[in-house]
Image 1 (cartoon, one colour):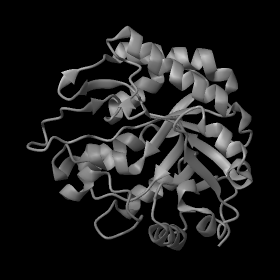
Image 2 (cartoon, one colour):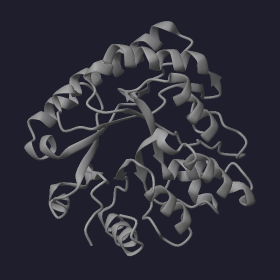
Image 3 (tube, one colour):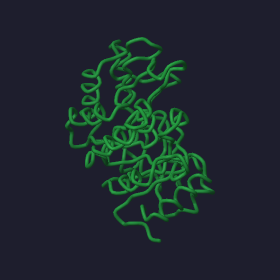
Image 4 (cartoon, helix red, strand yellow):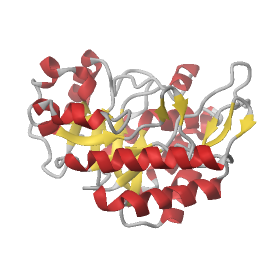
Length: 281
């Protein structure tokens, strides 16, 4: 079956050249951990020529970035690190999507760390300072929910935009022509699990309601009906117990590029077989 021409499909670069060489029509997506990461890509022809999407950093030397931080000094360091990475990535001419986590902590280790308004203002600053280095939209990924060890209502670590309403509102509040959304289908399940079973499909539909704001998708399986889904599984698409077919059909109709964000080769093969069998790619 031929791939739909409108759809740009990527695999994770971490799967390795031996596996990826079997899929010459697919692009690649890779996490940039720092501005220095770019020079290593430039000197690797396979990565340089096939990279279509980059995931911008969310930490530096093991410390979470926070563009919403109450500490002005740390907030500025986080913003500057992101701007430097985007500017460095300008040499990667084939990249068409830039995925960014909210990199805005509301709470961490139970401590208040930032606020929504500051997060929006800081993201606008990043776009103003680095937007002209982008070759495609900066796509905000919906964040995963971090569950407390004792009680699912206990959320000692929360990053903004792990709920669909806030994620969508964030994009609308930014209101920048180079800013869009990235739907992570596994993260969406971690959010759905905050709700009773009877409400979880409605949560998934709320994420999908972002519609044309979604310009990129991180596509993988996760378990919306049991506690396995809290772990952000990035399982094979279509495996028993993961999101139902109606959800994947809706994802396939989005006017977006996609990355099959699954780190295990055998699960990538299973996912592609499922998507092709149901004519979703």
